[in-house]
Image (cartoon, rainbow, N blue to C red):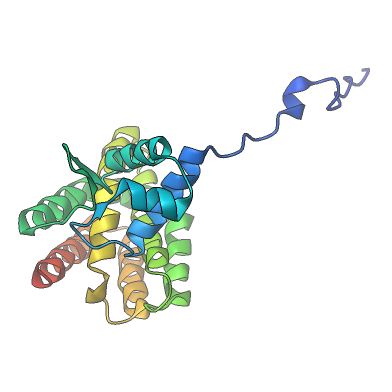
Length: 227
């Protein structure tokens, strides 16, 4: 049988497509997101147009477009006639966010226990926690915590669970970034998430559910104690 002709880059335009460079809005959105999650801005602090444009060498239109993206992610709020502000979570917010997170994740762990497959991204996130310290970039630990729980949700295989969790994820990250001090060490954070992994490995739903329930309730108590 004659071999099929091999296309080269010159013959196939699709092979010549280069990745598009990030737009100014995407670059600024990423930079502001990192600063917010690193604690550069205090809860309740407004991101002033002029100051942000000067610090990031950008236009007011680019800043406002990037800020709107962060509003959709739950990392900023827009106050009419005042601008964009970093959310400040009260007790009711903390209870509501952690309760909804637990409800979504509870269904995900049921599906994981059935398959017995531990998501590799969750294991990698725990490794990041082990290698980190609380004195390092705070956003790194927040991202590791995010990646751990995102992997748990994703491994459920339910697109609706993933979509629902995605809508809440930004607020969860920001809440953890603003209240990161309840962990005395990064190693303590890693060990706590390792216990969750071990509960999933048990292949026993009640064991896993109880471990995650304790994690959610303990988190809520610690967050409320810091108010």
